[in-house]
Amino acid sequence: MELSIQERLKDLRVERGLTLEQLAEKTHLSKSALGSYEGDKLKDISHYALIQLAKFYEVSVDYLLGRAETKNHPNADLTDLHLSDDMIGFLKSGLVDNPLLCELATHPDFPRLMADLEIYVNGIAAKQVQGANAIVDAVSATIMKQHNPGLTDPQLRQLIAAHIDDDSFCRYVIQQDINKIALDLREAHKDDFFSVPEDNPLEDFLQTAEETASPNSDPEQAAMAFICKRLKLNYGKLSDEEKKWLKRIAQKSDLLKNPNPQRGRK
Image: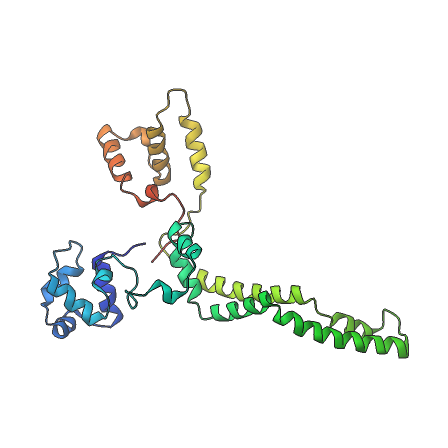
């Protein structure tokens, strides 16, 4: 969820453990002005105050104004990131939750995942495993030739079990890496306010669509009925004025602008 200017300013101050009095002393801005900047009703911030706060917090003015999401690298050059055109297009497409992708890539175990994936893709581990398997096979052949044990012999069975399927082993290691990261991300967001609802929105939509389906049904009214279903409101009991306001409010909703489900943010 995109942070407001007030939230960004307050978060930056809290991150540094500062009170409004301490921030006023360090920035030479008045406490009352700083408090108003973080208040529910945002007052106009002067250019001077914006520049002072951006300098003090070491962020860009664009970040404070909500025009950028990066605090420490506001002017990063795309060429320095070595991203392909396809990757840039993918990140701008809205097909994935970019904040979640960022959390995935900055997880402490992500470099290990990438290293294991690189080993698998380049076939490095396969050669090593194949060499180990060759040693096991040679020992097994020697035992079979010298002692001719049965296939149920415990020592022979141990050697057979030691033979590694390099492809399955590498994919298992990668899966373990992903599982650890996924569990950590899920734990980090277990208390998010906007979580997946327990009920099924698709089921609600289909039910509402069935209820409002008729040759003369109004698509706009059906959409409003669906929204009321999600808000647990009885659309039929709303007054004309309430329906009018509901329509105006719904048109401002990000959920209607972007129907793709978004993971919650604290």
